[in-house]
Image 1: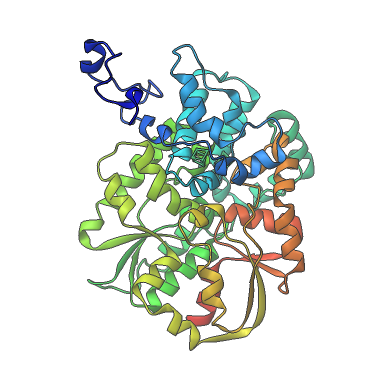
Image 2: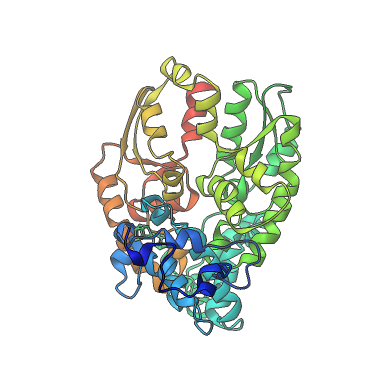
Length: 436
Ligand code: SF4
Ligand code: SF4
C-alpha cells in the first residue's frame, strides 16, 4: 500500500483523520435513500452506454452513465440542476441489466427524472401536460372503459389524432388502443369472482390497466389457467402499477398509486396469497421500483411475494410436463422478450416452454428493445427514434417462420403489431388454449 493510500498517512492533519465522514445527499429532496455508494461502484466500463437503445439512435442523449453516476457527481455542486436529457431516457432499464458493478442506474434515473419534473419543468408547458396525460393512462382508460364504443370512435378518428399531435404532441402515427366493450373486472364480477377455493394455493391477480380495459382476454386466460391448476384467484382493487409515471418523472402520482396497491395487496400475504402479474412491467414495478423509490409499510413484503404469471407456475407446478402432454392446432410465433421481462431473468421462459408444446413453432426474434418503452414511442418527437430502435425486431419478426407475434408486455405488443401488422398473443392465451 502506498503512503497516499495508507490510513495513517502523515500528510493528513489529525482533524482530517478523525473527522466523521459525512454522507453527501445525492438528491437532497429524497429523505430515504442515498445513492452514493452505488454511484461510487461505477468504474466507467461503458457497458451501460453500449446497451442503451436510446443512445444508439439519439446523438443528443448522453447515455446511462451520464444520467446515473456522472450526474450524481455533478449534483455534488449545490447549484447543479438535473440535466434535461433525463427526459429522453425511456426507462427501458436495460442499463441496469448491463452494469457489472451493481450501480443502481434506473433508480438514479427515476429519482433524477422526478426531481427534474418537480423543479425544472414548466407545469403549463405542452410537454408536461402531454406527459401527465400519458403517465396517467389508467385514468384515461377508466373514462374510455365507461363508453368504449364512443371512445374508440373518437380516438380512432384521424382528425382527432392530428389534433392530438398538434395540440398535445401525441403522435398521430399510431392507432390508439381500443377499449374492450367489457372490462376484465366487469367480467370477473359477472362470473361471481373465484370459482375455486383453496387454503393452500392462493394468488392475488394484479391485472394492471391494459388487461383490464384493453385486453381482458389476457386476464381471463390468467384466471382460467391458474384455476385449472387448483388456485384460488382473487382480484383486489388496484391502481396503475406506476410504470408510465416513473418513465415521465411523475413520482407523486406513482407514490399515490403505490400506496393503494401496497395497502390492497400486502395485507393478503399473511393469508397465504402471492401476487401475480400478467404484464412484465407491472411485476417489475412492484418488485423493484416500489422498494427502490418509496418507503411504505409492507412494500418490501409485496416486492418479495410478487411474480410474473408463467414464472410462478414454473416454480410451483410441473408446467413443462403439463405442456409436454398437451397439444394445440398448428401455429407459429415470433416471440419478443420485453426489456422489463429480461431484467427479471424471464426472457427465455416462453420460448423454452412452448417449444415443448405439440403443434407450436416458436422463434425468439432477438434481444433488441421494441422501442416503444411504454409512453416513449407515443411522443411525437420520439416516434421516429422509437421505430429506429425497433428496426431489428421488425426485421427478425418478418424473417421468422411465424406470422403471429408473442410477448408479455402490452406496449411491446402495440409496437410489434404497428410495425408488422401481425396479430400478437400473450403467452397466457396459448397456455389457456393448451391446458384449459
Ligand atoms: S433506462 Fe434504457 S433508455 Fe434509459 S438510460 Fe438506461 S438503457 Fe438508456
Ligand atoms: S456499466 Fe456500471 S460500471 Fe460500467 S460505466 Fe455503466 S454504471 Fe459504470
